[in-house]
Length: 315
Image (cartoon, rainbow, N blue to C red):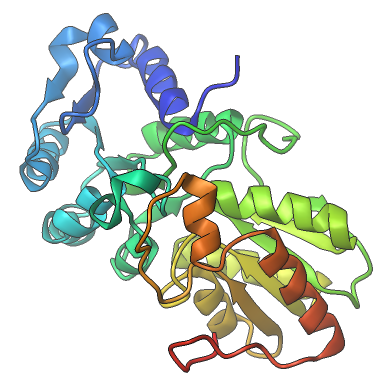
């Protein structure tokens, strides 16, 4: 059975901890009573309750003591509520702490704006030294967790709620810098997918349009700089699909890294969800669905101008 991103993280970390006694797991009251790490390693599991900043501070101390802390809470509470602690722990102290943030984007859906997070990449990408990943599917999540556990570097890992996805094929156990799921004519447009829903939509849009598709897992400045060079060797026009606001997102970063290329974004826009719905319904209300991606490809192919949203600013 394919696991969701957050369940794959828990399972992989539990397995790794059987061989590495320095791995510890902290959660902010979202682990439930059947958390596999707690069951297997109860002396290294800490549920700190809804004290996200304190949890990150605790992790900093554990890292200073030689442990490898993995902490997890909802993305809005990790990236926004605990932002100061993240800046100091992951950035200033460069502590080897890994933050795993489920409920990214609007995967919380019915939970409403308090549980949505369309700003986390903008926050974390502005903190120097943090490795940022948004894996797609179980295999990618497991690979990212293994890499974080080995590296000892600060990490922020973004995932959704309960949705499951079949990972793209991997040549080995390591993730490529750019996974070229499909490569078409270099003169045509290339889709660049980010995160779970961005990749799901890009796969569907690629099948509908026949354009190339490049999938990115690592989204920090260091990795994106290398990925941009590889992208530019093959294409010059890109449509980046991400469940994030365009401000501070990956499309904006790639546009700066690819000054001689055309880069446009299909993202969550500038609105705030005002009605309920499931994950995909909330995304569609924000302008992030398959028709939007297909239309962006068509506009770039023909050179048509981007539509100006209600706020008056083109992305």
